[in-house]
Length: 391
Image 1 (spheres, rainbow, N blue to C red):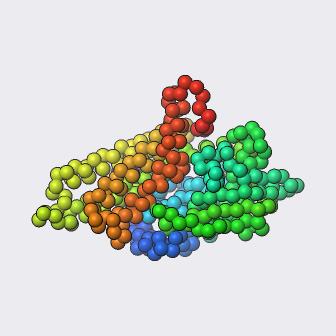
Image 2: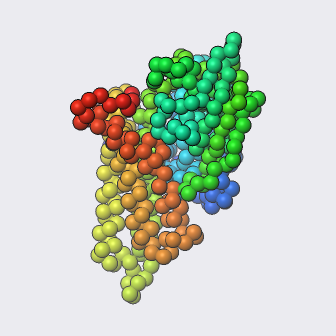
Image 3: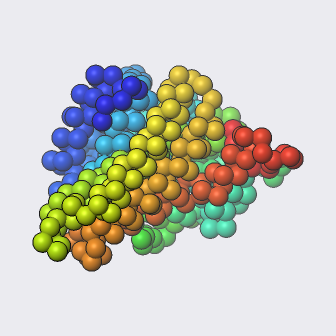
């Protein structure tokens, strides 16, 4: 879709990505849903096409393009109709490798970023814990110094790519106090002694991405695998949340567009009372409302993206985008399924997958309730300081 934020080059890239997805991803979605993971061959193929290194420097095998170009890729990947594939690739490029790109040193980038961009290694970010949820500051996993190593002990859960990752960016406490200044990030190779993966978690949606439990039992991580500065991990995580939330919002827009497209197509084909559903005013207007809802989310998100790409702080805008786009997606996919009637409840119609995939969006990357709490601080609504960290 044309928009002021996109140049002609961005639009050409969009067409190329959409063509690739239609030919090499969409025909395989059902198979990958059954297998419960995105195959390594897709990472390799996307690496060959340069899709995994869009924003990363050419020095490390990336394309050195702007974040808006990556946004185009994110939107199209989600529009392909598989939240699971989008989650798997996004976790690799946006959530995990971005930490190495932004805060890692040259040696770390050569060793881990380069193969990740090529699609030869899969990465994951491990922050969430069984008792932690959205409370990043309350993680229990520890990393204690022992000479030139850190010894990690703890557990992580709900980790996208956790089952098949070759290396994981792990958040761990490197001291007890002070809160928010006691967490560090480490690159942990998954073949390390003491590292193990629990069961592959079964999910309502996003089934074509693997999600796992991770266990660390006296895992010795070389000091050189510390990302950035010790005890600055919480700040790194929070800084990356702005972009992560925008990419989640972009993904919501892509899926919503696909849902509306399916609803319109079905409404023209399905005959009831001797005429297509599209000729019933109540349904026509419902689809118009869906399109308007999508456009609202699009403009909120694109504004946040523009500010972020310009180097400006956009905590408020990115948080608003995440809230509105994720709630919008639940509304749109629910209405799209309703338009499909009984067929929408059948597994052979892909609208049910979009509806299932949509439900995580108001939870993952920070729940709507947490986002609203952040906004109460950003908007100056609270009369006293809010303990939630937004920066």
